Length: 109
Image 1 (cartoon, rainbow, N blue to C red):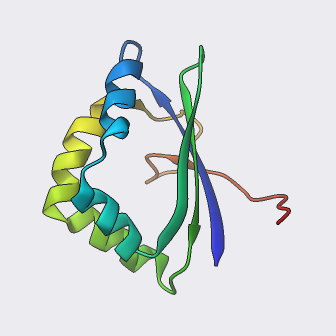
Image 2 (image 1 turned 135 degrees about the horizontal axis):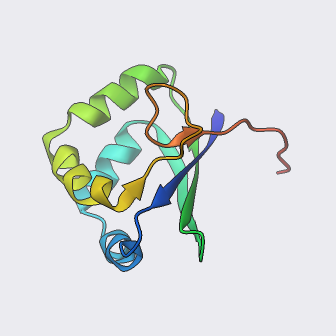
């Protein structure tokens, strides 16, 4: 199992839209996330900076393949059409990242 953390900003004026979308995530999207070996997925919002922090556990053996499968899913692509316009990637993210990955430096069970 691998613990993951990521950050991204929200566009000004999109906080309520993002909240509303995530108050009713489509069942197909939730099932896809689970089928891609992601567990304990949580997104936190920090206002007034409008920064999102996501954390989850990856329980699979091929993270890039699972993420490619998620990206290729037609229902998930429609979900992203709604959520991506809300997001503002961090300037410090690595090339090819949308959400900026974070290093896990401490964990206590």
